[in-house]
Image 1 (cartoon, rainbow, N blue to C red):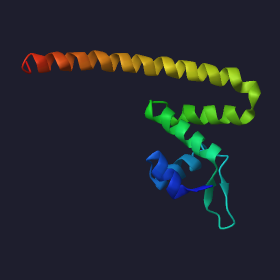
Image 2: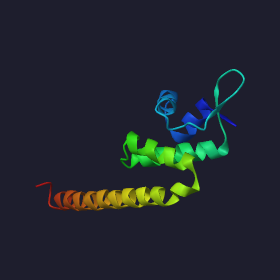
Image 3: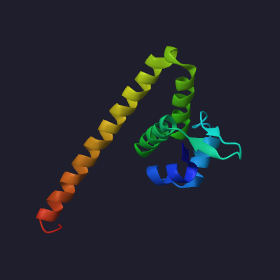
Image 4: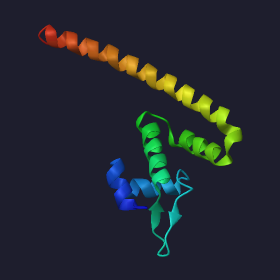
Length: 115
């Protein structure tokens, strides 16, 4: 089991951010020990990493929460979750393409003496 401090360090988050995610309903599966402190299993840690990935790639908290709620509903929501991930992947790929185009322009400016 991991403490909130350990998860924060592993995921490069603040404990405040993890508490916020919990408060927003993104971590409904997190258990607490007898002292009331959050404790994270290996599976919980992987789920936090996935939430970070989605957040870091621009998925809004509202959509992440929707995904988490669907996940909790079980296998009957698999196709809905799959479609959410496919749509998000498409958006991330579009962002990558846009960044590559911008990087090319920057590279051209560098090679042409910063015109």
